[in-house]
Image 1 (spheres, one colour):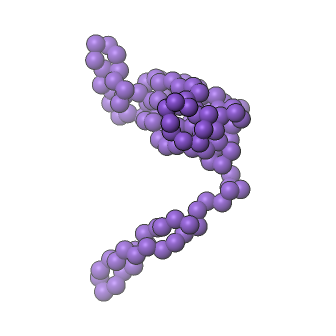
Image 2 (cartoon, helix red, strand yellow):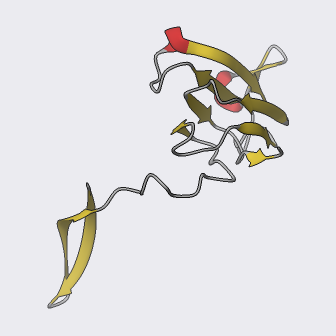
Length: 122
């Protein structure tokens, strides 16, 4: 269970209370498209496969000496463990333009930063 804020109108006031809401079920359908920002567990949140993004979600790019800054780029990582420990990165890439990410069944997690949504192609 996870907390969620519910709003109630009482005599013109809005009161925020915490209620317990069930977490997503393990048998829920995997995300497709995958949001452009987030950390996702393979098998639970997303399905293995080949995914494509249109690239960076930045509304403007910052370039220094003809090189885009990291904040202007779409970055992704796959992990051999279900956490964001950079010692367990299997593959990574960054780009301002379109790119692909292969999330195979041996990968435990996928992280995306500043990207357009990821669409599964296979």
